[in-house]
Amino acid sequence: MASKIQPVKGTREFYPEQMALRNFIYEKVRAASQKFGYQEWDAPFIEPIDLYAAKSGEELVKKQSFTFTDRGGDFVTLRPELTPSLARMIAAKQGELTYPLRWWSFGPFWRYEQPQKGRSREFFQWNIDMLGVNSPEADAELIAVAATFLRSVGLTPERAAIYVNNRRLMDSEFDTLGIVAEKRLDVSNLVDRRTKMDSAKWDAYALELGLSQAQLDGLKNILGNFDLWKNSDELVRLFATLEALGVRDYVKFDPNIMRGLLYYTGTVFEAFETSGSLKRAIMGGGRYDNLLADVGGQPLSGVGFAMGDVVAGIILQEAGLLPEFVPTPAAVLVTVFDESMWLKSFELAAQLRDAGVNAMVFPEPAKLQKQFKFADKMKIKLALTIGPDEAANAQVAIKNLMTGEQVTVKREAVVSEIQKIVG
Image (cartoon, rainbow, N blue to C red; front, top):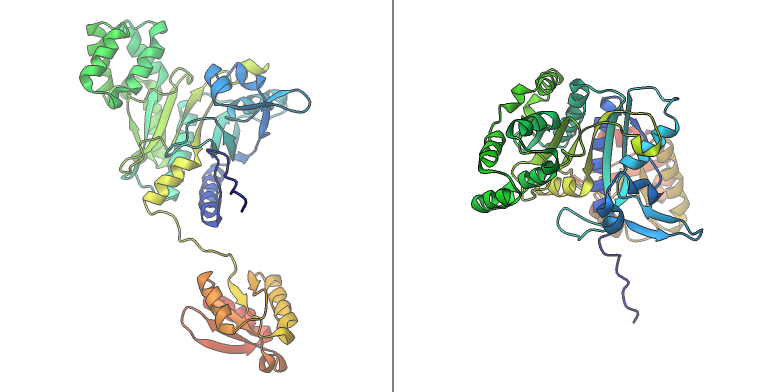
């Protein structure tokens, strides 16, 4: 007996149930994006490795990318992220595009990471950006898009929050503490580890990094000051705009949000589910400047965020927020009474489809009870039958599988009867 071939480690298999989840997320992403007027776009799934070398860092290029040499001898990779492709495509038509651009995409990505809960080597990601404008109001719009998605999937402000910080605000505070620019990556990583370490060990680690006791005390005061945003004109404008957009209840200032602070140049934000088992961010993003610097374009600022489907899917499943899985989009099953009626069944199904009713035909003659049982397992609500008597009188028998009731109607009335029962 041949051994079973296993899937590649870290990849994902989408049985109908998993595909329904993926499509549910996609539909909500699409609705939130389009509600704010964003255009859908996409880029190649395979890119030259050189595209990432300058922008994405050595670790992503050398350790996390699926790289290979193609048959033409070019060194390429399955795309690990979308921003470099975005930059290249905009640079290619920079003078032809209408700004500000509002673009969004939802597609597959690959990273060679250690698979674990909330992280796989193959994932789908929502990317959404506004390009060509630099204002707190634009930042607020992207945060509002994120909040709109959270609301649409049932994650209320009591269950999810978007935490905001600002690079320029933190740089100003670091200047006051005398933390030099060369130390800020270390300090950002230090803050990011604060919740993962014992407080005494965290203090000791901070001193090992070269902070003085006075700087450490000052840093703690900053990280505990949740009114610090009032010192930033950008954040004051941001929160006023979020209030006007009707999503202020989702958003909180948190000076501990540090991830991405060295990449982003202004506002940064991350969304978390506040009561579940998964501590990973649902989504994250912020404002960046000079997107096109590494691909030959003119300076262009933007704001955007990304959301992977793996974390979002786990959170929605654990919270019980997914719609009931329906095994088939067919509203009705057209049964096959016997071989002599087979083509009559196909004719009826074709009539229904032409009228906009999704219809499935049982693939072979079988006892009607077996066909009804199949329809019940597939959660089909109605079973239609044409037997000899119905065929002779141009009629169709309609069995309501939810109630067990059955009616016989004229062939021309079958669509209206179906619509009456299932809507």
